[in-house]
Length: 370
Image (cartoon, rainbow, N blue to C red; front, side):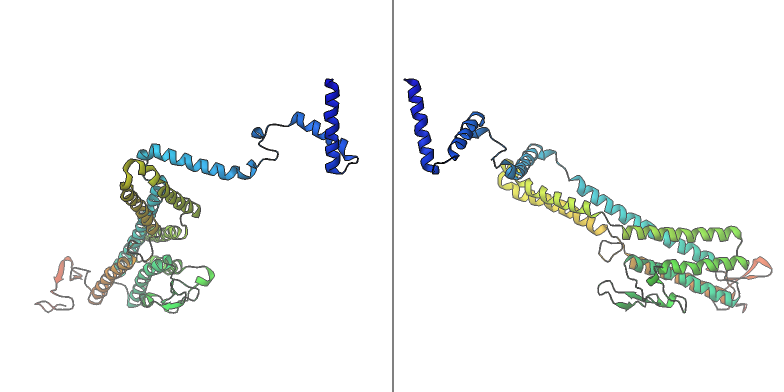
């Protein structure tokens, strides 16, 4: 009786499939597949790959989970968070660049002072032609300071002639009369071929050192020391150029900006449960501090520009020019009247004890001696 009932149910199922599919040879095939699938099919709640949507949504789900984990971590550890290390690193690196740039500028200034002192002290009793050459080289030393400043500010151009440079704001050639009178007559620039004006001017200085040694103005150790000063000047110029042309890597700047923005976005979530509305001024104060440090680092990264916090190169160069101009003027007066520099005395052949004192340069004393 039970077997007859099962055969009857199976016969009715075949009849329904024949009716729905139009009959034919498909019925036995479909029935065999239906019987096979029911034995190996997983429950829908346990299916994660075949036919499921998990592969398409796994990435956004993981991102939301990571964001939630970050919020939880900040909520539990916000009291232990100081300034982000990347901000501190950027600020410290930028200040090191600023400090190194100032020190290298001091090296160049010291070399200019030493060379000027040596040139003037060893040539103030030389013939007129040699004195004119000495004056020209001292002017070249001052011009090196201006050329260094303009080079570090990208104020040079392929069309450079004495006193001409490229305006960094417009990109057009502009006259810079601040040091055009200091350059040798007939000088032409080689910036279009990759030679900076600073290095070009050092050739005149080295040629003068060689000529002074050949003429016996100073002995070999003095000439060697002058050469060391000139080499130190070129070395400091190269290091300043490295600071100017090697910015902080862009990957570090991008990551730092993103970390700073993310920190500001999640900080309110970490504070709102603890201090309620006080989270608004606290977050503002914290982000004011962090963005301020980042802004300082951004300005100090290139210390040779025109910002208020950059090295005061214009003032420094003008101050050194005034200082050397006084030395040059005193050197001229002493040479014209046979005085020693800065003492207003004239050496007489009788020896050091026979010096004659004068009250003013070029003015005779009571005995009528000039």
